[in-house]
Length: 502
Image 1: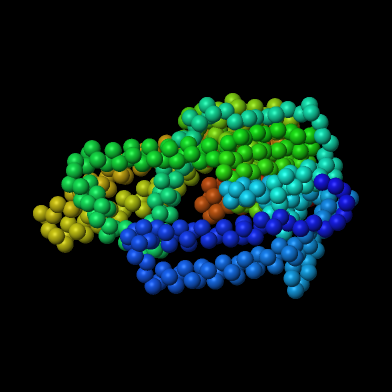
Image 2 (image 1 turned 120 degrees about the horizontal axis):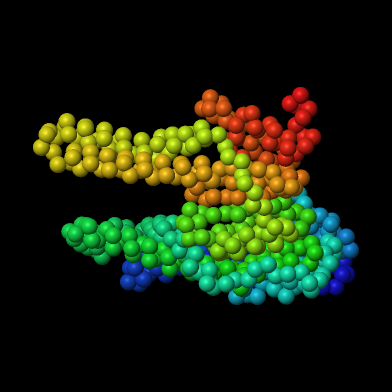
């Protein structure tokens, strides 16, 4: 893109992108017509008329927004001008631009456009410091990103390595993620809400009632495992589809000495760039099932990636992959070997706290109501009631199994708990459902927070939170001994706390 400072408009196809919201209501009308055999009632026609009016309004607003939005790239700033009655010009110095993100949904790709977001040094905590252009022609967006990064001070080179490419043998890790079960529940809930919004009562549909009747009359010891296997099969298929969609054409590379770039996506493509100066560390994430299969993921701790919600998706550096590959990629991002020292263990009272939490929040809330309900029904219905033994047996069986699970998980969580300081890094590891190993640059820590609950104070434990202007903005070191907390903070950030401790 030429370096002239003339104002440029967005692509005219932006108007079509703004009308993409009509897909869901029009699809609902089509499903309603299909479910009712083509008999569309008065309410549906009213809805269609409202959609037509909304289309006209949205198109008009989109045309005004498009005609009154422009941008330019000068020698030292990136400017965006917008507004109808109140004109607004936002200007960001090029040296403050830290990330440039290109995103294209299926509709954007169909129209050949993309959304460009330029994150600045002050946009880690929200969108206030971010400039967004929706939408540019895909070729123009690529040229503008290259120009922004070049003028921000990046120097191109052909010698920086490609850290990782997609390897389809990693697909075996897709079923070891949350979406195996959670994806089925989310899809079922979304379908139910759509049908309920169209006035379709799912539980009154003949085939649904017939399915529940046949399920209840069959041998439950066969049908229940079969249903669970079916859910697992559907969830695994969905997890594979999501893995392919999210990580298609994945490539992680240093495009120059100062810029790390992640490119991925099949239907919705995404290209995220992070300046090396904003990279504060990495997180090696090992969810429980993925850890059991020997896998892990890697996320960046970096500024300029938006708020916490945006940071979760934009900070991903590696899909679920072998742990050895994750360690290699993390080392490449850090530009140094991934630290693997022996972590300092936390007091054993932290194990007792995890056991008590599990018993109080997972075992007692289920066992006590089951026992109480069984005793109440037994007293009301008499000794011949068949319900009371079932509830009492369910209570003690759940109590035994859940207690064993809680004890095992608490032990695993305590075994994973640890911290240390290794050179310029602070290492913190914690968690059992997701064991996270944080490697954080000590120079990035801006402040410390010491917090403790009444039970924690009684046990002599305190939780440290390192405030960082990047990533999650705060990273916890849970359940540290009171006598070790201050020394850890002082050792990690010399000169920050000494005057207060004195």
